[in-house]
Structures are given as structure tokens and as C-alpha cells.
Length: 159
Image (cartoon, rainbow, N blue to C red):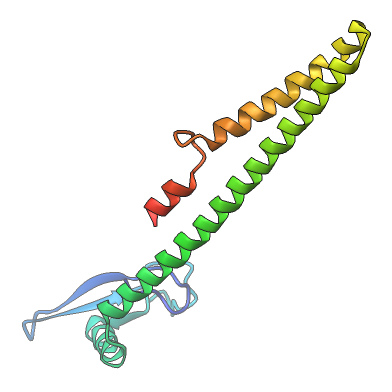
């Protein structure tokens, strides 16, 4: 793809026929009506041969090295995999801590309920018990290997 130097729009490949000489030339031209390179209503153009020679010269100085590109890709994938593994490990630790905290709170609430003599006061703690049980359930669900949350094992398999 060739881009216009002035308006940065893609240029169009065209053919110029020189019938008297029996020759055809390929060239790129800008078809953007608002292009600042328009001179007297005439579109700016460049011969395709010049563009191709410039590309060849650049490639001679900067050869495409597939082995270098592949090695760079592999290194990037390892870096990304390691980063995701660390993120997953941190998430798993956080979920474990959340679950442990909720279980401790649940035990504390149950202990308080047992210590109470008044059943009407014990009923006030029922919502707290439900809330902590729900938190434990959610953490268990997220930590389950078949859940949508990635496990340490699934991340190791991926990388």
C-alpha cells in the first residue's frame, strides 16, 4: 500500500498507456479531492517503479529475519504467560484470603449466637450468617477447577 505524502490517504494504482511507443507505465496517484498536493486540478502521482525500487533498497538494508521475529514472538509470549500466571496466583491468594476471612467471621457469629440466652437477639445475626455463607460459597465457586476463574494448574498448562 502506498500512502499519499500530503494527505496520508491510500494512493490508487493506475496505468498510463503510451500507444505511440507501445509502452504502459504503472503509477500511483492520490484521488482525494481535498489533498493539498492537487495542483491546478491535476492529481499528484509517482511511478510505481520508483516506489518498488525504494522498497527494495530499504529491504536490502533491513532484511526480514524470520528467526529473529520468531524469537521475539516466543519471548513476548513467555513474558505475557508469566505475567498472567502471576496475576492468577495473586487472584487465587486473594480468593483464599477472602474465603478464610469469611469462614472466621462465620465461626465468630455462630459462637456469639450460642453464647446468647435470648433467641430474639440471635435472630438478628441470621443476616450476618447468610452474608458470610454466601461469601464462602462465592469464593469456593471461584476456586473450583471447573469454574470460569482460571486456576494455577490451567495457567501452567497454558504457558
